[in-house]
Length: 234
Length: 44
Image 1: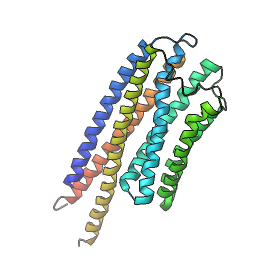
Image 2: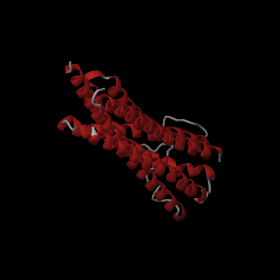
Image 3: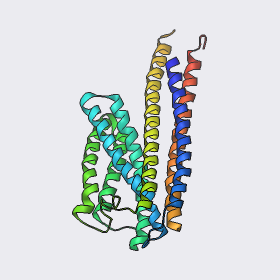
Image 4: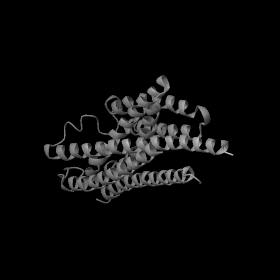
């Protein structure tokens, strides 16, 4: 019981750190985006780039983390791996949602349409839907739901290289992978700093989410023990 | 500029909502632990 209370206190502290980092990230990235130089052809709307790309990176990173955790769960029965998979899939859905909203807003200004079935857009949408399917399989998949979801995570990870390389192979409307390396020097540091802040935020949210999941699992075990003890007592 | 503000607002709105949902889950777990503690008290 004492270890449970300590674990809960740690979750509370981790939550406060998460909240503070989120608020700090909000202010710093706002400052960066506001002060970044204007791009000549697109103007202000190009500033979506400073948070659209970090979110896309986190969608892919979350998918790989989810697949790594799923592998550990499938082949070693690792509960920690399972918690990593669940937590990163949730973050993948969150940052994927951000990609799916900010991308079309940028596309409307740059291409004149919110959506086009370009390979990069379509493969990204599929990746995001696979992470949602992962969550649904876990929630409603019954007894074998966790294993089914873990297998699904491996398919999602196989889609990541396709998403990344699609712009170079099929050359649709979406800018290719050389865009970041060809950024003007004034745009480079706000972009990489924004990327670092979003990545740090992802890391803190992942640790926090995994900790909550662990405490929840321990709590369920303890509740069963207490109920058993109460059932046995006269 | 409207699109930038919309996109930016959406991202941070989503992140803050997620953090708030985790906070709610932490609070619920604390409540359940307190409930178990009461049940484990001698004479309860």
